[in-house]
Image (cartoon, rainbow, N blue to C red; front, side):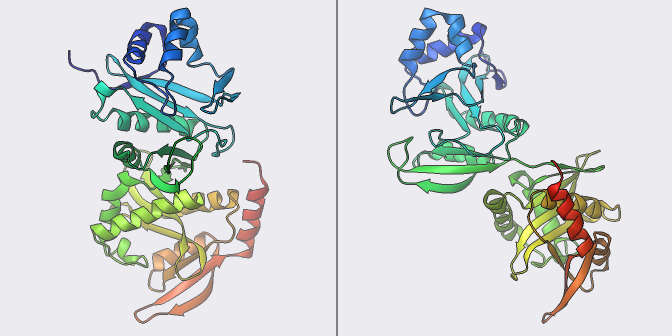
Length: 361
């Protein structure tokens, strides 16, 4: 029988036989210790209670060192293609992206051996990330062994960046790789949706960077595909390291890619700076101004401090946008080939930002 498309389903009594059959074949849903024997015993004692225990947030969990700690909030899902195929879970602390020391990562997954190499882990991780965003997480972490190339590929395919290598981990013997996947935030305006720029934006970003009147007007000038890939890696790294960065703009009505808008650390030592560029076919509709107001509001609420902006003296459209945003000219910088204007937030805009920082979120 051909497999159905993979879905994530909640553990249920009508599907538990496939789960238990996998346990009986020696598979364990826990990558840190083998729980197959104890789960089989619990199932045989009371199948309904066993299934309920897989989703209950009450009680304690047993750690590899034998200690017990309260459960965190979590979501458990089974991978299902017409048959049981594996598990994926999400755990978190309310109001924080951080995790207790005894938790190895926000997401854990395990595919049964006979269902591997079908892309199931990659698809399951992609499906659980929106649920992570819905519970308030801006970033999730995952861990794997340095020699687990398959798991590394799954995480990186879903936007994961290597955040750390831990040589001594309480969760595993030997070194551990820690990956981070940036989820949010999502900024909504009347006509736009802004989301942190990711791997799926590469083709559109490359097209924008190749246009002399779009990417060509930015400090870096026109970029080829290889340079765009490096730039995108840098943009993604800023999100992981700082919790802010560049957004991809899309139209709410059509989903069309409009351009980029966001924040970056200016490489001339000017501090946190605005950056924006719009696709040629989306110009003249006020999208940049609309997006940058949302970005500045985001910066104020995150208390990121004063923001500057740099534009070429010949870029009249950009200068009009900065004027409309309440920025004032601070200095003129002469380069070999052009004059650059450095703008700063005005005193009135700083006061507005201060009120936003003090206002409840």
